[in-house]
Length: 449
Image 1 (cartoon, rainbow, N blue to C red):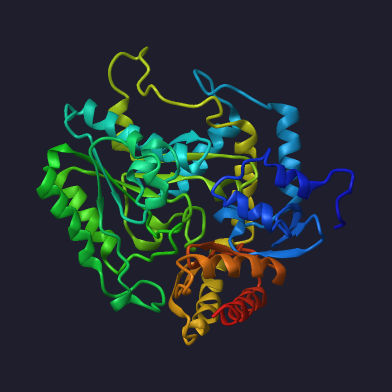
Image 2: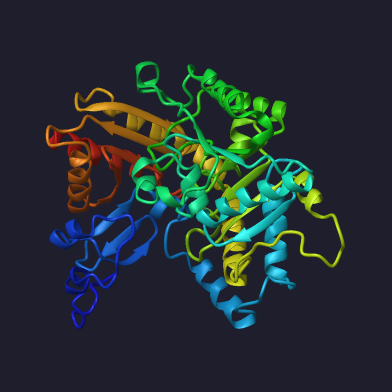
């Protein structure tokens, strides 16, 4: 890989701000632009326009578990574009999308046999919330309108997803546009009894009983659905306590509340299974997915629903639209073609098993940071991990940002939110790469203490 041509001044373009970068301190980037512009990617590495190689510690944004530059994916895109580059999903279908829907349904827990496609995790979540409202209305329970999210939850940036999400900075600017009737469960992380856990913490299943409190406050007859990430990813890999998800399922079933698992991050192998639902042995009523289904190459997301939900919608006159919802690009044939190749590679290379084999490697490596004084917590599950840093005297998030920027210089593309470093390396990573990654992080953490 070589540097890009100097005919265009990329740094100057970044500073001008024509590209308004999402979830970014844009002014900070303009002041420190080095290693911010990605020129190419191959395998587990990015390369910047300066020629700097960066190990991809988070699989892009949790979305490229197969790494970058896979020639089979490029060939599938070319072939599909030459065959059927676009086909409307309204009133029509196409072979590649029909087959992908069936493959995804076959990967899901038993009895979840129907897939509604969108283009992102945000769209998947808003779709699931609308399905929940429609389901109850069709069952003559239209009074069920409340949605229950969870503190520190992330469900995308649509107004529905923001409403059920529990990240304060994502919510406060847009409070006036939030959905009515939304409430939140307490999150599950308690460092006083969970710090430095390996895998699922033993304490905390009783946190699910917070749903009983909300049922008592609002009455079950007003609650449509509960949505949670099986593992909360965007706020730093918050791992569910043993028995927590099972207890949540029991309470939802008891009161006729739909349970939605947001598996945009955990779906398609991150937990060593098709979905985290299988890893934890809990069947929800809906699963949202995105990201890894196409290895991040072409946007795609969707919702998997139970037979009961689907069949409830399939009532009324047969010429009537059962669900007045969808997107121009739902089930896009290019995305579906890539999805097939991604699933093929995962199957042929037995990558779910590889994730399970890499899990103890990452666990052992990441917990070598437990002993560092400036580290307040380390946790992991599947091929994910997180490290919490004690804030510096300058304020919360300052250390995390410094480590991110130093990481670029040291050859790592890190994901730091506040003072938490999250890890979700590609499934094709080697044990040596994971150990080296943690070794560099150790040096960065010590250097910024």
